Image 1 (cartoon, rainbow over the protein chains, first blue to last red):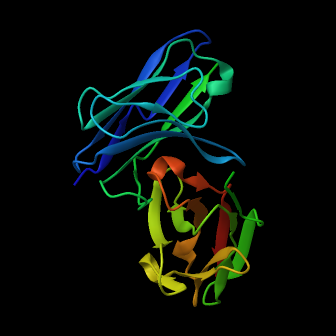
Image 2: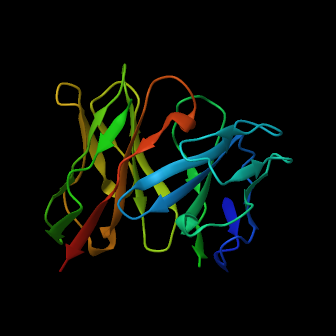
Length: 114
Length: 115
């Protein structure tokens, strides 16, 4: 009963390095999301996907790319990391049916960019 | 633009006492409202939601929330707090159209329950 799994859980990068965060869900959900959580700012949506092969920009998409090649996976990439991208990243998924807002979250990936 | 305000960064309550975590919102049309809880080093967990119907909605772990349209509020409540309720609580709002991509979260309120 894994739900939403994120890897890695922790990562330290140097400015300019690249990395990919992987999100996997086993609930057959159509929708998947990447958020970042920063102190005093709540959660902000980076990118999201409404189905396999589709992606869309959220509130704070700059500096990130995403891909959804398989329904169960949603990848978040940083091509050239910057200190401003130091944050905790959360992946979430939700089922079909509009407006439920019932998101299932992973446990987070803490990224530090030096 | 829609928004959510959680006016208290932290709420302190003694175990056994009732608790209230406040949330006010601004959105076009009838809102969809949600509460999530985050325990330390964990992801957010869904607690409850208001879509339509009874203004008092009940959720997980004995929590409930009251929707007040005239005051544009959706306060989270529990009759008797437990130490294990200590966590970070987020209110969220979305308009009645679109997917959860339209969900806006508040900045969170830390609930501290002490013996």
